[in-house]
Length: 405
Image (cartoon, rainbow, N blue to C red; front, side, top):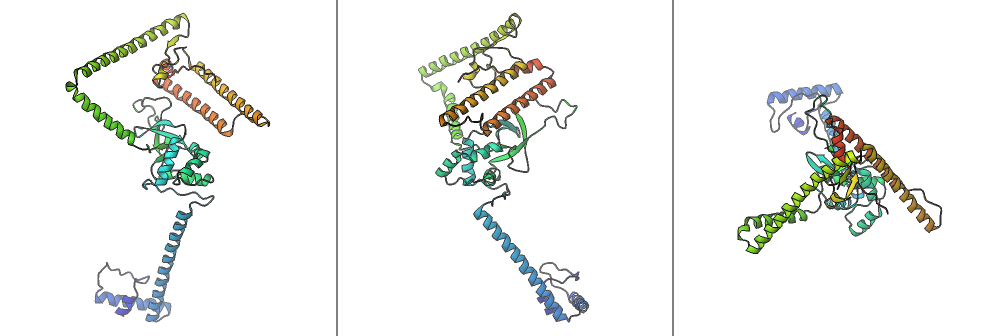
């Protein structure tokens, strides 16, 4: 009977005795097991050897079934990896994998495209984020086909499903992750200490656990491209530090030249402060003499480039209504230019006039209007919270010159 129990493998159902790995049963336990097997065989109407053979057959069938299931799963995974996603089937994202050459090539291509990125704050750091639909649109563009012909690492894109699965290479390799805007006032109702200083157009975002690829979702870049520029800047900074440290041993004419350059820089800095004070005095005077007032270099303190800070030379002070009116006129001029270009193309082709603007241009116009409305709401909310609406409007002013094509 002991030999029969050893050949039976795992204990049949209904036998409560269990042994630790490597533990040998005692004679009393062997006798108890034999009695239980005999009782189970009697209930089934079988002899003890027939009952043991029946249990062994059941265990062997269960093991074979598990092996077949595992083999089928492995074959399905191999077919999916070899052929990619089937039409109408989306691929599941598995994050945490190291960047593959395909994902790096895709990230480099999308970084080179104009996805109209905007700056966001993620974990107290600035990142560039973009909309999914602009990335999908770039994957369907002719530029992607040309890049794919030159770089075979770029995945093939035939339809919407393959484009989404191609895009999901980015979150899978942590090159870009889906983010959403954080409501900074949430959880701080009635408390002023929890509200941080608001910056117009700058979102504070968080990473979403579900990395989906819907058109309206935003993704933040974690891929910064080749780092040779950063390394070169680090070497240049090290050389500059060493040059400053060894300044006392420089030749006399070089030290004299540095002194002249430093005096010139101090003069320019003083001139800048003098100009800032003069433009403020000029605005206060013109605000009472010729309302609404005149600004000299109105973009001087705006978040623009160095040369754009000095364009235009002057502009009238604009309130919130004037800014909205000017932006509305700009949108109308852009729409008129698109209609004119469409009519010119239709005349050259000799056909009927085209519709004013393509679908993409209309979508871009709608997005611009939505962003402007959202920016206006944010500015109004910030002005209401601080209680100094006039000061906020002054900070958000940005004068522009009407350009003619």
